[in-house]
Image (cartoon, rainbow, N blue to C red; front, side):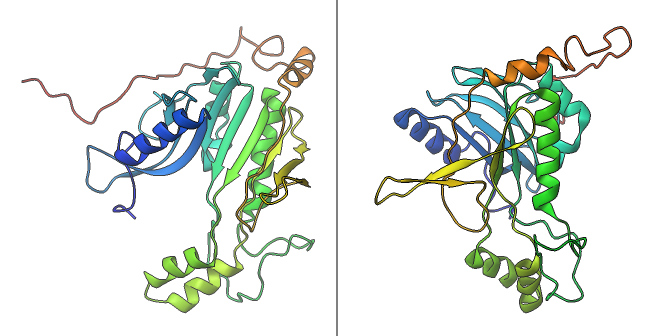
Length: 270
């Protein structure tokens, strides 16, 4: 995995930046980041690239330099990775920067334990508690809570772990058959849009051959592109009665300080 990880300033991201500029699109991408300071350290990172190819922000553990909201022509956009969306202080830091669109990126599969009976695979229709970590529900709950509190839109983005990917993962273990079965039994994360109340915002896919649109609540088990139209004016009404960074905040009681200084493991003086 260390070999396949990339640098935030590496050739792979330079190619993506060039493509974003050529096509005039913004790109948000979660990736496994290698550190220039180590041969083994890796970070779960997210990069936001503007439609002119510039890096608007890179968020990864290590320091708070990337804990920012990018002001773009499409709105104020922030991003957090995976479980960071459970951190109230990290989320509040983005809220105080008038975030309008929150991007949360998630792993496609997150098994937290071995299932004794892999036949007990995830069943979204079941009323019983799942045997393994239910990342479909957990991701939506956290993202929806942030949207409701921030009165912002949410883009929940999860990678697809298909059979070929599972085979590759399993092949690098000493128990390939067992690991493949465990991966098959674990729930596949979903990608979706949420509105400023935290409710699901149905999106749509486009048939490449006919150009027709198909309404979809989310994408989960197939590769595709999910689209949605976001009216940022909808971020206003909710704040008029419940603005946790404005009239509904106790600034006389609470004071959150955020250190966004860029940190290095050592300072060399030659």
